[in-house]
Image (cartoon, rainbow, N blue to C red; front, side, top):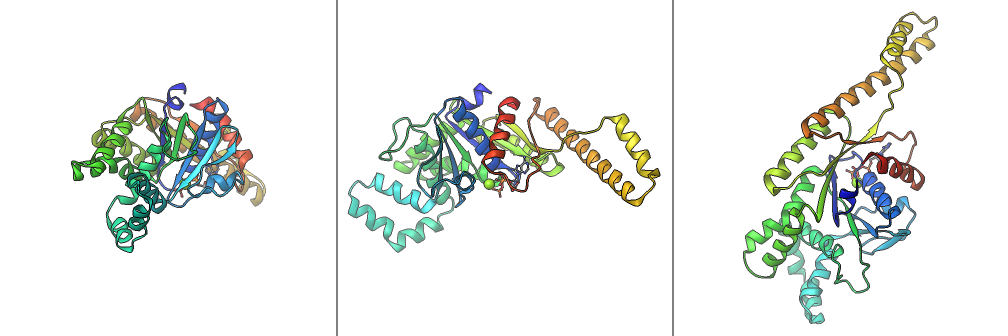
Length: 310
Ligand SMILES: Nc1ncnc2c1ncn2[C@@H]1O[C@H](COP(=O)(O)OP(=O)(O)OP(=O)(O)O)[C@@H](O)[C@H]1O
Ligand SMILES: [Mg+2]
């Protein structure tokens, strides 16, 4: 546990809808509770975390949600403007470039440019000496990263640009960012998976690709939304028999529903075992929360579970 949150930068990725934002927020709460000044970063126009906390508008602003916990939502266009203003010290010139329609087209049309400036901003947030005026100094930056394929792409972007540019400031900065991403002491990658066939397969694929394409490990797998296992094998047997023989249709339906949930919980455990076997380590587990919506209270509860599980 200590290891993971002692890094300065953590990327939380996984298949769409598996609970990346939820886990990123819960991880942030654990880290903040333990005394780390932590910021949870959302990308691609999301601001779910600020909204869950009923926080202020976090669009390209560092907003404090609770003691020691901040959030920001990074917009690539604003990240690009900020970058240009830092590079081009003469303000009117920077305004001219970033405001020019040609440049806007160029930036949007360059594949990977949004990802690059987003990564640049994330990197800047993790610096001890912030370049952003008035920016906080964080111990830990947690990124609610895009889903698996895009998550990997965003991690590879700095190197891609560094190689393409070879020399000059873009190459230099791309290389610097890439070096921090592959530095295991500095940066961690966490995969969130649902305990189902496809998300588990995708997690193992991500692990292999991180190794192959970036030469770095996947630090931790978090299996989210596990159903409780309510019955042991003997109880399940009794339940199955009762489902056949129960007197009324309503009773039979209720028993079958219980049995079906039991089978689902069992199948989920098989997927957890599959992950453990393939990675050589038991994944951290988070329970399914039986609530229509996850607010601060539920996130707080999940963060307590996570603190123990990690
Ligand atoms: N442990 C859980 N128990 C119950 N519901 C959960 C749990 N974790 C997440 N959810 C719910 O599942 C939905 C998806 O979660 P979340 O938004 O965190 O996923 P995501 O991976 O960030 O999705 P996206 O790929 O769309 O960004 C949300 O409605 C969230 O409230
Ligand atoms: Mg999300």
